[in-house]
Length: 277
Image (cartoon, rainbow, N blue to C red; front, side, top):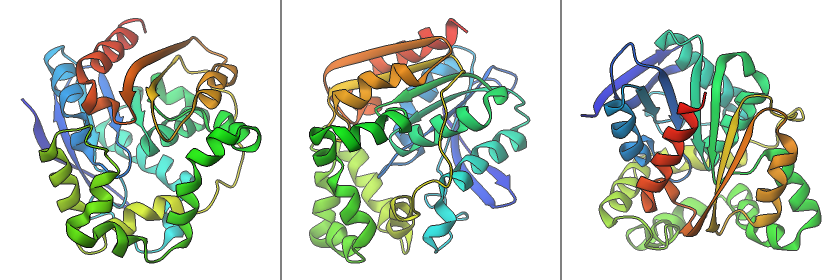
């Protein structure tokens, strides 16, 4: 039901999982940290059955062929250009974009910079970057939730700490909210030489050079009440950063790992959103 494929670009070839007919309506799904394309297995498979052409790539740093060493090569402009390059290779002039965690941030920026390329936008967990920046300035709760980012950006020893004792610190990030077999797979991938450093380079690349604007693309934002990374202030403010059709969905008693902890609920929301466009 799910195929493996590679997407060649000038930056290198991205590994990906895919399902659905080649001529189906295209949907690109972007994973977060510390995961990979397989985060979206349930969603990709279901969308494929429904006739969509769903593809989830291992993004920059997670695909071995696109794993530069310098943090500067993981800036948001470069990550957005990867999305466009993959879509161009796939022959997608217009597509639906879905993103979670860091993939959600890239999705917001892609919608801001290339609204003409997107039919719809779905972002899971990650609020609009403008709403998040405002919450970091004014909301103590969000400031505390985001404190880990400072450590991951500035501490070269982070990789050693995360991978010590059979990667216990890396495993603890998931708080036992997803199947152990999936955690094992993520740990195995990030234990490859240079892989965890590449993933952490997303945090170490520095702030975006420009400011993100309001989003005109039809958007759905899905936030879960038990998310440890993103609080309610930025989640609720995200509506103020969307000028096009906007839908906000809140999942009760679900953690940050929505795609795997509540796969049926999230997939249903995505299908509904796609069907309304």
